[in-house]
Image 1 (cartoon, rainbow, N blue to C red):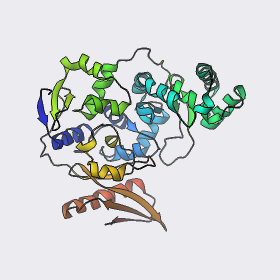
Image 2: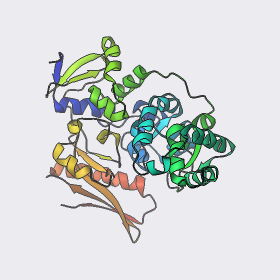
Image 3: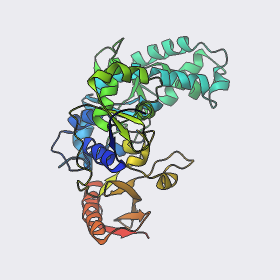
Image 4: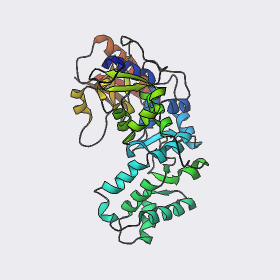
Length: 369
């Protein structure tokens, strides 16, 4: 049995909400928030904007869009093999650390593996690098150009090889608020003007996770990034960390001076965007999402809906609909919500609609019991 103080589920909830800027909105730049939060989930363009709106005072979409245009933040496949929005510095450091996740896809991707039989992956990656050094290319255009060199192979499968073996960013207009566009790739080092380091620190990687999500177990860190055998890294860091236990007895690690608020600290209602990292960055999600509600959130289609927090925990989901110029925010609760929290949701929802739908003729709020 590991040593250390026991942290209740509620204590873990408040600690994580504090790290994730969900106990109170912060006066922080969008760039500093992306860095502080260890990146943002970005499988689709809009969730990072909602993530920052619900965490920062006075956030406006143009601030994040300009960071993308200035190449200070980038959209790139990293943790778990999914697209994240990261600062350029973190992307440079973390993309090589997560390469084993991409290598695993090359070994086990059932969709593309028939097209990969006897394919020289290194040669495909090298030629893709040449093509992208000439100019950024969409996934379709890159695949078609590669297929000219390797006829008979599906272009999408060849693009997948390049995506797995090269650090590629999705360049604007992809990811800009209110803009559309298919993923168009450029090499990370070319795009940000700095080389990808050869030996980034896995210890710093784990410390950054704990700063943003801790206290957490080794299994939690591995769930966040998709890597394995991080217990070895945690053991090397042990002299610099503080050890706790959760109520099930599992050992948790944390930075000694990181905030761990009183479990009774009030937590405001919050609207989290789709694919919010708090739902995807733990092996044990019960600190924010009950096992019962997890079944309603994680469905076979792989899409993670927009959810509502009340008292710090997921209590429902939300959506915005548009009809005849009226934007309606609908909350679908999973449980009974107090009148106080309903009033708070109405107030927060009104501000959300002004942010998300400023040009709508009118705004409406509904609860779909």
